[in-house]
Image (cartoon, rainbow, N blue to C red; front, side, top):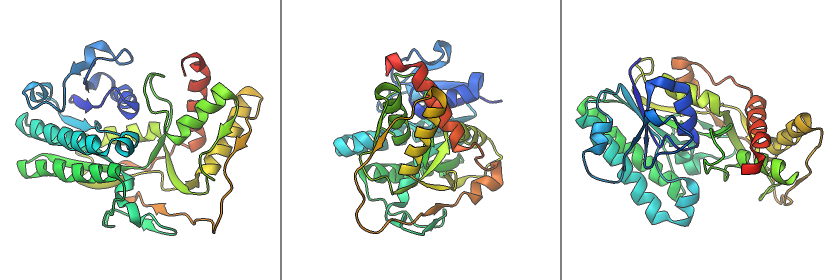
Amino acid sequence: MPTVAITGAGGYLGGRLQQTLGAESRSLVRKAVAHLPADAQVEVDLLAADGDLRAALEGVGAVVHLAGQNEVVAAQEPDRALTETLLAARHVTAAAIEAKVPRLVYVSTIHVYGAELTDGAEIDEAIAPQPTSTYAISRLASEHVVGQAAAAGVDVVVLRLSNAVGAPVDPAVERWSLVATDLCRQAATTGALQLLSSGVQYRDFVALADVCRLIAACTDERVAPGTYNLASGQPMTVRSLAELIQDRFEHHTGTRPPLTAPEHSGPAPQPHHIRVDRLSAAVGTPDTPIVEAVDELITFCLTNQARL
């Protein structure tokens, strides 16, 4: 298999994707990290306009671009998030063209649909994005930036990812703000769960293992260039996820953590559905039950409790 370069390889998704790809991957990181194989890491600053990035992409069969500021940084430092996310996308795109990389896979977010994610909506790739947050705006703009590579003969695949659930490769990976990771860490470290909202809102949760498997499949010609939703296709409330974590934590430990959440007022929202038919037709449907992803995450948190 040709080598696949991964930007943002030290992060939550990047670390697991590196494990999925194994020896066929080249991990691009700003600074070397202890939780990735040392011989697979290349230190490169995606924000610097120099030749290091082009050199890092020489000879690869595909690059998966994951790097960019997350939703927490985007909410706290919107100027930084917009600037750095777009600049990284521009530099990766230019370097991929210069290095003659045949395929560029960009992992965006389902939140680019924004205002379209309403009660009862059916969200397929034909829906026009209407982002409402800085995070989603930066990701949609980056979709357009990486799309420029198509004019230079690069196959561009954009994946709009929903909410991945699974264990990071190391506790040092800082994505404990995600609802599933946060709740599992709470259960392991405090013995209780607390939601910041009533939890009646719907989300699409998909196993991280499936996410990595499908991203890996998109690095070759099995998937035609274009834009695809990457989700489970199954809506679930945040509260239902929390209750599942209660159930599974009790299964693993014999103790059921209590759950507290603010009361909901007003009518209960109705689910929207993320359609995944297009990607499923190319490489298969995400089929890992979410309970298995939760079990994986709980086991990780219990095993690494002293480091959380």
